[in-house]
Length: 466
Image 1 (tube, rainbow, N blue to C red):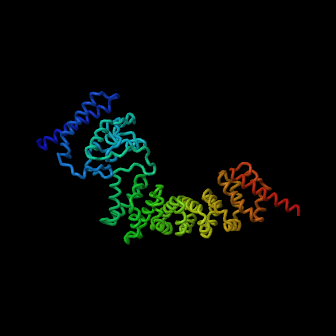
Image 2: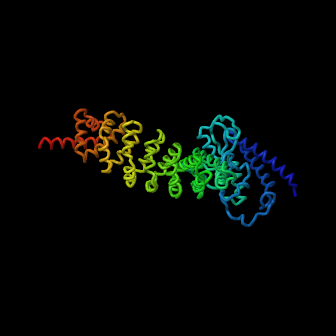
Image 3: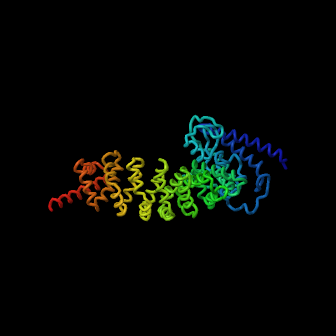
């Protein structure tokens, strides 16, 4: 029986020889059969040295339980030979390929590295003369053989990568677990804050982290528990980091429902919207906008009282915050149930002022057009000087969409208010702005402008006939 030291030395020499042969195969334009045969011979010798009979490493008898077929999800990653792991993901390679530097990687991970604009080898940092990926058939056969020996079913190759999920590595799973552990069971408040800040950054930069949090049943609740800790409840940085992390997480389409269904998430965002500093309020509004992409979330957000603080932010915030608030209000008002909440919350006066000041014209006109189906909204717009404001947009704006939204609102006003119709008609008689829009506007704008002109002409005929 060979001594352990001698066996380890022999295995080391065989591995070095095998690595040389693999590099040689990768660098040859057309592999020589002799090189492949020599590599196969070395591999067989290495197998003989490392594995004995049906046992495992060093002749360890195999447990009867090992007869079950295992996937890489249930496999102990520590047992995977280092040269079978992708240097990027640290996981067993499914599709090993060789880079121009001679290093072997799992195809999807090195492809994402290259697609990100990198032109160096992740391991050697060597500048790559090309980005050709050559299948490493030898390593693939070695991995396949190793999987057979260990009753492991190597997962099939992914035909398509989930764009919203990205490539999730074992390292990232470990990092997330470590951060959540620090958030839930910190050694100090400072450690907890640092972990939260790091999680905010990772969820901003990496799709994979956004997906990972959605897959963790407790992660969002653990995250939202931090601002309720007495020592941190009044900390503005904690509130901002938490709100921004929720925003980042909600970018993932699958997570929108997961976050919306969490009983703490939307109430937290609304509280942050009311009392946070401006960056926190802005990011909370952006998170509500993102979540409102789901109709079920639109209703929850409206019912839980988000409309009033969103309108306040639309009126009081800086330029960025106003845009976030305006986008959220518009999206929420796509649900008819939320339109009355917006009107009663004072949104009409705020958006009309914004249009008059030319501070948030696009978003404000879009909100007005959406609310113009409400009789209550139309009456308030007409009574608060909305008609001259809308006419000025049609007259002065170079944006076709803004002109369209303005004439949509004017049409609704003119259909019920003869006094306002006369105001619009007199503007048309003096300047012809509605006629020009009926000829040159968007298809919707042309229809609404034509409707106003028809109503005005019928009113004039009726007047003269009397």
